[in-house]
Image (cartoon, rainbow, N blue to C red; front, side, top):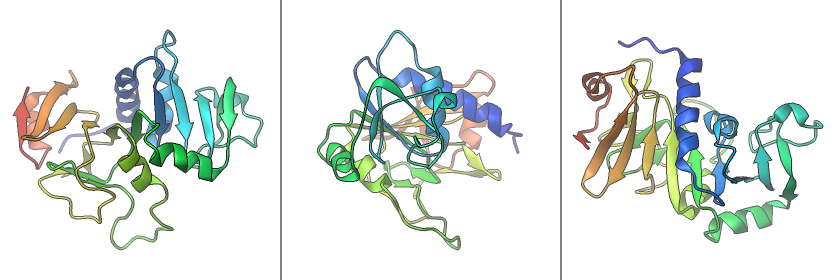
Length: 212
C-alpha cells in the first residue's frame, strides 16, 4: 500500500487543477479540496469563480474576509472588487442555464462510464445532496478532484457502488497520482505525477486505463 501525505497530495491536485482554466471562464468550485484551487491560478488570466450560495468573483485571500462572506461550504471567503452577490434562485439559474464553463468538485467514486458518486457513503448520516447534481449536469465541463484511493482501496472503479450524483457527466479526473480523461472508449491516462510510476497508477485503479 502506498503511503499518502494527504495535505501534500491535496496541494498537488489543486495546483494541477488550476491549470485547467482559460481566460474569462466561469468556474464553479465545490466544497473541500476544490476550494484550494484559486490560490494557484495563473494571475495573468481572469477566472470568474462562482459559488452556488450566491457569489461570483471569489478570490483566494480568505484572510481579507470580513466574517460574513462564506463559500458554499460555509468557510470564510473573499470576493474581488468587481464580484457580485445574488440570491440562490439566480445562482442556480446560472448553473442550470448552462452559464458555467467548468465545475470542479470532489468525489467518493468515479467509474469508467463517467458516473460520479460524491454525496453519500452508505451507513453515514448526511443532510442531502446539496447542489452537486445541478452543478454536474449544468456545467459544460466536469472535473473531479480527489485522492486516488481511500484507505488503500481504489476510488476509480469499473462501476460505482455508492449512490450516484449523476451518470455519464465526468470529463476529467485529477488525483495526486494522475490525470485521467473519460472518453467514449473508456478511461485514458493522460498524465502521471512524476513521483509515481505508471505501474503504481494502474495498480491503484480498479477500472481499466488506456495509456495515452
